[in-house]
Length: 426
Image 1 (cartoon, rainbow, N blue to C red):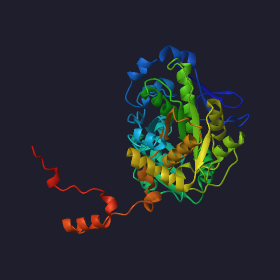
Image 2: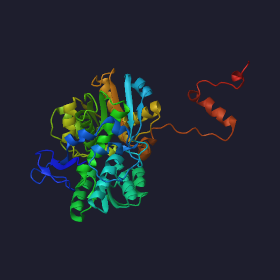
Image 3: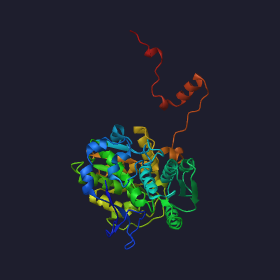
Image 4: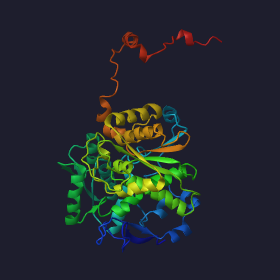
């Protein structure tokens, strides 16, 4: 099926061929994939999707890929959990967790976009893939390049969390540590991409890469029984995820796969880097860059490439936005862990904290369904919460030592039941 007509400018609409391009040469607007939805509509249906592989490639008809054997066959179809304990804690009727921190090879939602991007790079004949990253993308590009047998160059800010550095180096890429923040790294990568002609997934391959995020929204709808939730809270760095989830929901509606599309999209950012939230709260589509200052490094993009389009997605869907400070981020991580047994990274802490605030402010009514987007695994950012955790209870390897420790800390064992009291007296 010839589903892709080419690329088009998101601003002036000028058409371009389906090549590794990302900026309009006339108005400098970003390019995106231009689909032939009339052809798609003749092929795509629920039955065909459900019969597909148990991965993001079940949505292949809706993605800009022609390759018969795409990379990332084990990406996607992550759990959608009915979070009853968290709902009770937040005092809201229906909460779901879309947990992209598990099942994926590099434990983040970036595996969705990178599976599409690396597959497209292979179609174009590239032998080197690269990226600028705040961490999760670095892990994913290195992993998928290894699977594809491609060389990879990964550019990161020098102050990245150790877990994300190790999670990249294990795949043996060329890891370039840059003395600067993400926005400075990204500017450098634009120059490198132009000079060396590599496939930078979030630069010259970006129009195709971004389409992978749609599958996050597709899965939510399918896992809810082909219905949309009333609210989705999405963490935002560059702003692409919230934009593409919204696009995916609209595509499902346009293709007749769902009867309506009335979900409200809400943006969550860290207070130390919240240019999209600021724009939404001010009612202005001007995204003013900031210098990041937050423990949430995965969202520390001060000049978001898709900030304007995230603003539009929130406005079209009648959603809203909020941010969370460092203390609230840690509290959000802890709340998700103790209620649902899910260890999320800092971006997930932002999502939970912001959802809590939006519920308390009445923006998300307590009797409506809400999906929280968890995009990365807490094992990658352990140092952030370490000092906020209770220490281990030290004892000798004897029952007497354990008894003494419990006696000194009665809150640890509120009720001690003796063996004799539990003996069956039938």
